[in-house]
Length: 125
Ligand code: 5GP
Image (cartoon, rainbow, N blue to C red; front, top):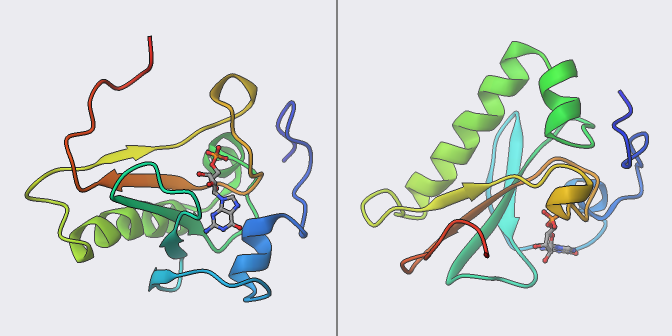
């Protein structure tokens, strides 16, 4: 489903290519529904991206078009990644950018998982 400003799913977007193994990434997790890998430009000591295996441009696209199993699988993967990286006790932040106002750059849904230090205020003033 097209999302205003993001267009239709582009099979050449960088995360599609990472999913297919065409460009390298430092993977930390994978299952039937999602993969996770370190962000190339980390903004915290831990900065991992979790992406669904399905072809979804954004959270809007995903929540409108994905099956219940895909949605459950994706969010369970986010939780599993944080657990695997031992972020539960100190705490962590999950962030999804969606569309123009958020600054979403890559048109394949991704959840940022940040941790490893106190993360400060939620939004820049
Ligand atoms: P967005 O702004 O779309 O929410 O976040 C995109 C994220 O993808 C950014 O944090 C950026 O550093 C990351 N990123 C962009 N290209 C690559 C890449 O080729 N490999 C990895 N691992 N991360 C990337």
